Length: 221
Image (cartoon, rainbow, N blue to C red; front, side, top):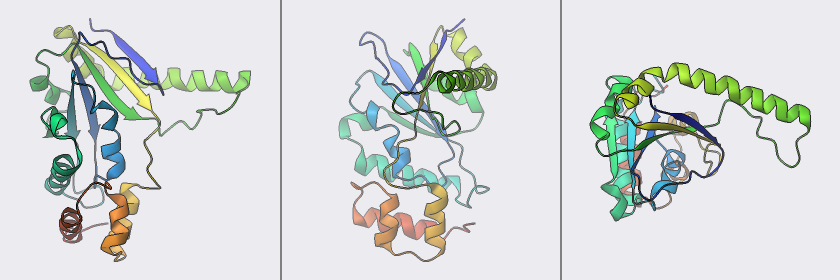
């Protein structure tokens, strides 16, 4: 049976003798600079592959998965270092956990990366005993929930003797950016300059204009 470990708000320690797969799954409707920032810490780790499993659909904000895929490809092509691009796989989710199977050859551990956006209990300074107890209780509850929700993934990895790590960090926030805000700005007719704040700084202006043009053609809601 594969082992399952949880890592809360701390940098993951990679073993240079093992190969890892970072499993980054989300709706990305539409994907913006904070989504890309979530995988940036893994660019410089050569024994890490990155698997982006896109759950996008038109039901969330009205952005079709094909449009999100084009946006992701543009981000990867223009904003990710060339030596890292070949280690990134972008797939449209078809069968949930089973989609990861083709990407497991030679992999020792899978890192399921997610944002700590539901519990706002990450205390600053010197938390008191009651705060620490509440934090630990909230984490135990979420770990139990994640084990249940990801049971199928755990079974798939166990058959290959691959370990699973949940890396749970505060969402990377470069400015106050969200998909909801991105869509709202497009709907109210924001300028290219204003909308550029939702996209990676390294993205060329021409690519930003293309992305905005595609999004404006969608039936956003």
